[in-house]
Amino acid sequence: MAESAVYCVSGVRALWVGRGSRRTRHQRGAAAVEFALLLPVLMAMLMGALEMGLILYDKAVLTNATREGARAGIVLRNPKPTVNEITSVVLQKSQTSLISLLPADAPQVTVLQSSPAAWPNTLQVSAQYTFKGFVIGTLMQALGSSWVIHASTVMVHE
Image (cartoon, rainbow, N blue to C red; front, side, top):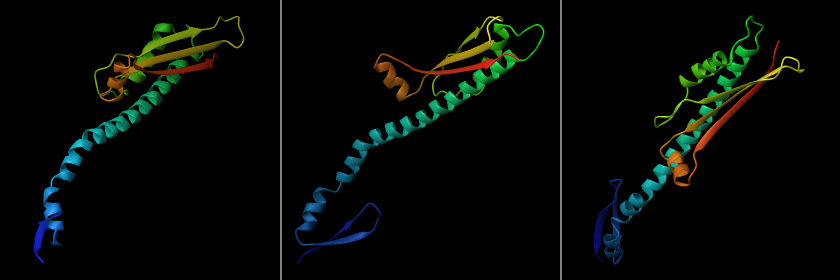
């Protein structure tokens, strides 16, 4: 019986007896080729998972920013806070904390105040932000849409 030594990727020597050595010799690069074919798919899945985490983080940041804007708008103050002041609070709280892998635009803020005669007298602060990323953002743009994150908070005036 003829013996031949084949070195595996890990450097451990394996002995093959008989005809198996010829068959193994022809398949030496198969694992490397398979890995090269699967690597882009695995990297896309990893980046997609990373971007989903960033999207959830940005949603939490945007929700917190709208809460802060609504709190700033409902406090008892004379004169009452203007829409521009509430908007600036939301933008200040969100722009420093939002994370995007590509350059992104500032969130769009909407402030709706009910009339003082209505009860309960509410203030609604809404914001939306377009997430831009490598994998999910590019995939959504290829499908003809974008990933828009919405957040809204309603509070009653004091």
